[in-house]
Image (cartoon, rainbow, N blue to C red):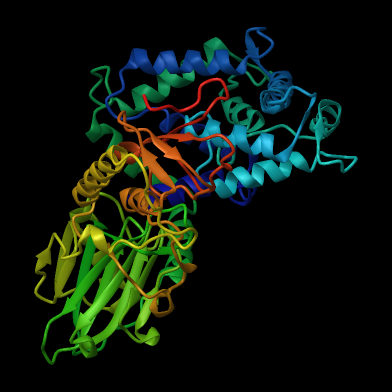
Length: 533
C-alpha cells in the first residue's frame, strides 16, 4: 500500500468521527489492531514483540496493581502535569542568573538560547524562543517586569495535563488497550495483554518461523487496508484535500514539460526568504534558444532563489515547490506559481527519487507525463531544456558586501595583528568556496517573486557573513580560531555542523542578535581580559 494511503488510513481509524460512526466494540478493536500493527515492524521476532507488550503494560500500570484500569489513567495524567510544572519551575530557577529570586525577560532569553544551542531545548527557531519568553513573562501578575517564583507557582497551577501534540494521551492508550479485556471485567491483566500480542503476532507470521518478514508485513497491510470500513473513501478525501492546495496549472499542448529536483545550489544569496536566521541559496536557470514553450517544475529542499536568464520568453510557466521557501527573478510574476503546502511535492536529499515522484504528480495535474526529468543533488546553474549543469560559479570572495551598520576598521600601530587577520580572512575565503563554490550571488530583493517574505540580509549566511563581519572590524580571530566580538552584531545564519565556530563576546559589548545554532559562545570575564598572548 502506498505511504499516503497508510497515513490516511491511520488518521481515519483514529479519527473520533470515524470511530463514533461504528459501535464501541468495533471501534476499539480497530484501534487496538492498528495499535499493535504500528508496534510490529518488519523483521521483529516473537520474543521482542512480547518484550514490547511487557514494556507497554509496565508503562501503563501506574498504581502497580497488576491490572490496567481507568485509575491508571488518572494517576499518569496527574504525574505528567506535576512533572511539567516542576520542570517549568526548575527552568525559572536556572534562569535566575543574578539570584535575586525573580526572572526578567532577558534572563529567560539568555537561558533558552543557550539551552537551544547545546541541544537541550527542543525548539527550532529564535522566534520559538521569543514565544516561550513571552509566555513565561505573561505570568508577571503585578506587571513589574519580573516573574517571581510565587507568581510562577500560581500560574502553573492552571496548566493542564501536557501531552505532546500528535501523540496519544494516557487516556487514549488505555482506551485502546481495553479492547484486550477478554473477560469484560473493566481491567486488562498482563496475561490478557500478552495473549493479545501473541495472537496478533501469529496472525502475521504465516510461515510460523518466529519472525515477521517484510513480505508478511506487506501482506498484512494489504489485508488490513481492504478490510477497514470506509478506508478507500477516507483516503480519497484525504488526497483530494491535499490536491486542492497543490494543484498545478495546466500546460499548453505545445509546451515541453521539464521537472528538476534539487537538494541545494552551490551559491549563497544576499537576499533572505522568510527569516534572516535561515540560509537562502541561489541558482541560475539558463533558458536556451528555441521556439518551443517550456513548462518547468522545480523542487528544492533548501530555500532557494532561482535567477532566470537567456531566452526567458520561452517560459510558459514555472512551478516552485520547497520544504522551506523558494523564489524567482527574471520572469513576469504571472508566469510563476509557488505551491503553498510543504506536502505538495517531495523534497529531500534523494533527488532522483524526488524527481520521479514529482513527475507522477505533474502527470496527474497537467494530464500528461513530463518530457524531461532531472535529479541533481547540487548545482550552480542549469541549462533548460538540455539539462546542462554547472557546479561552480564565477563569483569571487571579494565581491562580498559589507554590513549596513558600521564602517570598515582602520589599523594603526602593530601590523603583526593585521597580518594575522589577513591570513584569517584568506582562510575564511577558502572555506566559503569549499562549502559554496558558486560564491555569493547578488540579487535585487525588489525583483524576487516569492510567497515568503523577501529582504536583504543584514549579515550574509555562513562563512560569507563571518567575512563581512571581519572586514568591518566587528570580528577579529584569535590564533586558536576563536572569533572576538567587538561590537553588537547579528550572527550569520547557518552556523551549524561544519560551519559552527567559537565566539567570545568582549567586555561591554552588547549581546549579539540572531541564531548561533551550534556555535560555542562565551563572554570575557573581568578577571581574565584578552591579552597579547
